Structures are given as C-alpha cells and as structure tokens.
Amino acid sequence: MSLLELKHIDIQYKTPVKTVYAVQDVSLCVEEQDSIGIVGESGSGKSTLAMGILRLLPDNITTVRGEALLNGKDLLAMREKELQSVRWKEVSVVFQKAMNALSPVHKIGAQMEDIYLVHYPNEDKGVIKNRILELLHLVNLADRVYYSYPHELSGGMMQRVAIALALIFKPKLLIMDEATTALDVVTQTQILNEIMVLEQKINVARIMITHDMSVVSSTCKKVVVMYAGRIMEHGRVEDVLVNPQHPYTQGLMRSFPSFTGEKTNLRGIEGNLPDMSVMPACCVFADRCPYAQARCRSEIPALTEKAPGWQVACFRMEGGEADA
Image 1 (cartoon, one colour):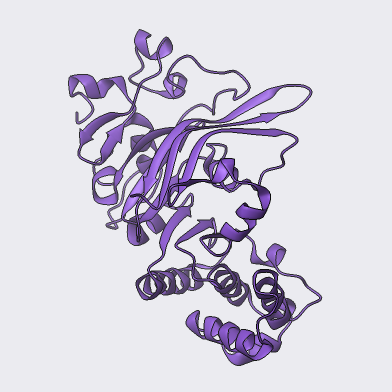
Image 2 (tube, rainbow, N blue to C red):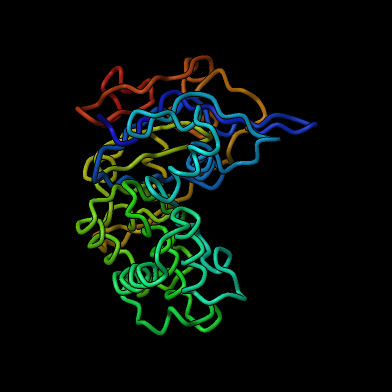
C-alpha cells in the first residue's frame, strides 16, 4: 500500500470576481522512503497541491476535490480533530522562509516545547527537553540554540530549526516547500546532505517542491513536472531529466545550466502561463508548444506510459515521436 495516494485532485480558488482552476486532475503515489521532486514554473500549482491535500488553504475561498489517502485514510474527509493528530505526527511541512515560521519573541526551546505539549500535554518537561536537544543535534545544531532567540541565529541555522520542528514526532512523510531556496549555495548543500542522511536514519519519505532542477537531480529518486495545474511528465530522475519527453520538460531543461558542466546557450520558454480562470478543454501547454497540432487545441492529452513508472501527457507519445 502506498504511503500517500492522490486520486484526481482538483483545487479551485473562488472569489466574487472569478474562479481560478489551480490544480486539475492530479493523481500521484508516494511510496515509503520515496523522495519526489515537484518542479515547474511559478503558478504551476506545486505549493497549492501540497497545501490543499493537507487542508492548509483558507476554506472560505478554496474548494478541494478528489482523494488524498494517507495510509489508506482520506485527509480530505477527516474531521478537524483527527486531521490535527495527523499533522506533525504522520506528515509535516517545512516552509520556504524559516524566519516567518518562528516567533521572534520566544526562545527556540520554548517554541519547540509548545508544539510538543499540544500533542502530549502531560509529558514530563525533562523528557521534552531531551527530545528537543536530540533533534537539534540531529540537524547539527549546538545546545546553545535551545536557549537562543531566532534573531541570534543565521538563516541556515533557522532553516535547520524548522527542519527539526518538522521531525519532532518522526513523521513518515516530510513535505519541503522551497525550503532551501533563500539560502546560499554552500548552506543549501549542507542542509540537503543532512536531510538525505536523516531520511536513512528515521525512514521518512520526502516531497521536495522546488524550481531548482539540480536539487531534484541530486536529492530525489523521482520527479513530477507540473504546468498550469496539471502533471506533464513524471518518472525516475535518471529518465525524465536525462531524456525529457514532454516539450515543457524539454523547455525547462534548455533553460537550466547543464548538470555536467558543458557550456550551452540557455533558452527560455516563450510565452506565459494560460489564464487559469478559464477551464481548458485542450492541452494547457499548446499555446507555447513548438509541436502543437490541431488536436492539441481541442483535446486534453492523458498521461501515456513511456516505460514502467514513466508517464507523459503528450499526444506525440502515441506515435513514438517524442524521442526525436
């Protein structure tokens, strides 16, 4: 059984003026100890998908449909009290800016204790402190951080604290939403290396939401390419990023420096994302695709299997043209 199974997830933002179809018909499986990177341009629905299945989006303007089965239980059908027990314990999130996740007027130890006491209000304070210090050591932070305020820490140290917070109850699934984007390259590399070591120690699966293809190539086993709320391609990293089949994935790779250090002329993808307030009845990438045909503008391509575990949403796959 999959750790997390998404079935036909649709997410809409509704305002008095218009409805935005942010995520459309997304199905995805996350196995135990998986590491999956979700990539795509800003506005592709990556963060909306993650926040939607955890029901962290405002109820008054969002509608989430489909099924999000965590260990067989549907997150979208849970009552609020049951959902609260699942968050942190079974699935947790590391957000992009740690400074916004930490209270500036409370010490790190006090903030972590508060989270622990919400779930275990009768736990001994000494046990809680030992657990927090253990977590800080796990992410290579000294004991002094326990007694520090956030402003006394560097950006990298605060991001490590955010990761420690996410791991406080040893969840089975960790979602990282651009968690290292704001860091310098050296600190980012250190933290990513530590995360991969931690995954082996505590057997946690990871979903990494990022714009950085190199992060996915070096830290993930699988990759999901999203565009305008839909999955364009997904499969193993060594397949999708080495030999991309969908024109959008190919465009992303042409706009990113070569992983092997070869000098290439980078090219952006011409055009812009489609108007997400109009429900498309065609391929969402058709207006920017160099291979678009009449069919692309009148039908929605289904995900077609290129190889076991490797799927592409492009009509060119039916004729075996994508490799060319």
